[in-house]
Amino acid sequence: MLITEKSYFKYRKKILNLEDVPLPEIAYQVGTPFYVYSATAIKSNYEKFILALGELNYSISYAVKANSNIAILKLLGSLGAGMDIVSSGEYLRAKAAGIPGNKIVFSGVGKTKDEMNLAIEGGIKQFNVESESELRVLNSVAVAQNKTVTISIRINPDIDAQTHEKISTGKADNKFGIPYEDAEKIFQKASQLSNLKVSGIAVHIGSQLTDLEPYRQTFLKLAELVHVLKSRGHDVKSLDLGGGIGIAYSDNKKVIDLLEYGKLVKSVLGHLNCKFEFEPGRLIVGNAGLLVCSVLYLKYLKNKKFIVVDSGMNDLSRPSMYGAYHEIIPIKEENNTSRIKVDVVGPICETGDTFARDRSFPIVEEKDLVAFKSCGAYGSVMASEYNSRPLIPEVFVKGTNFSIIRPRPSIMSVIQRDIVPDWLD
Ligand SMILES: *Cc1c(COP(=O)(O)O)cnc(C)c1O
Image (cartoon, rainbow, N blue to C red):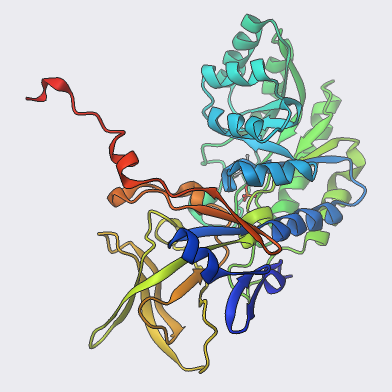
């Protein structure tokens, strides 16, 4: 099943529009490169997920790390979403977007005491705890604040999510969660700590999953664990099933059918009388965003043709980091269908700064605009200032409206953050 792209990105009068805004209009106003997101696509992705969950008793906590611009958090909050966060920065972003603390879930393998303090003080729905040490630290923080804190225990089910190794999180040798075999022991320990209230179990086996099978295996293990825990007198009220549902990065790619996902949850876990938590990130925003850049140079050598664009691996790191594929399309609709083989590369001084190798690509000219598709998730949030390139702007589109939701900083403002110590001369 293909999500959203077809309807929200279309050529009108031979120019690519996002919703009803011609992309050159945005480029003219903000310059290139920039990220741009469709509010309608995000809303539609969210609603499709809701539809798939049907009658289950659940709440959704959008995984902020996928795209943390507060305009997007605000939109999702208005649709009823809570937030799944992994740092105090993300906590404060969620708060800044008006999300109440009781709709925020704190995940992550390395929460600091300061982060725990901040979240407990500001209000938090639950912490997903990933180790015995974290359990003790969290309890001590809760004791000091004289508060009771709700937690879930994140279990590592030792399931291969069949995704890229860097975003696989549910194998026994990944750093995440508590080993499945230790679950009962940890539940026992947690129940003895004065200021923690154990609500249930959390899992998150990885990102960009395109097959239901790893989920099925995980859910089966979860169901078994719930039975064991209940038989030992532990109450399991909630099951946090994490995120991870993948998107189609190219048109012919098979992805998970959301209705099948919903059915699977219901059939394997539905009878357990638990409240469910889902933490989708990529699924909600991934296909709703583009990275738009300009062609700087056509560098056609004897044996190789390069298209040098003005965005680099610092703006979009997925290709260099994960070998990820992004479709790249010209913003001017091509008149002829001829294709050439090119490498699409950025300006960064590393060979890793390559977006596409030997890609069959339409004929473009210098100064043309091109768009990288499916950049709404893990694009802007993973950007860096490598090569002293300031973070690129983000733009939000809805219907005929577009607004800058994060401006391009001046290079001077970036440089001025550095301090030369006065003992240097
Ligand atoms: C990253 C993450 C998610 C979201 O993953 P997606 O693949 O973007 O859906 C959800 N939960 C946890 C705990 C995560 O770390």
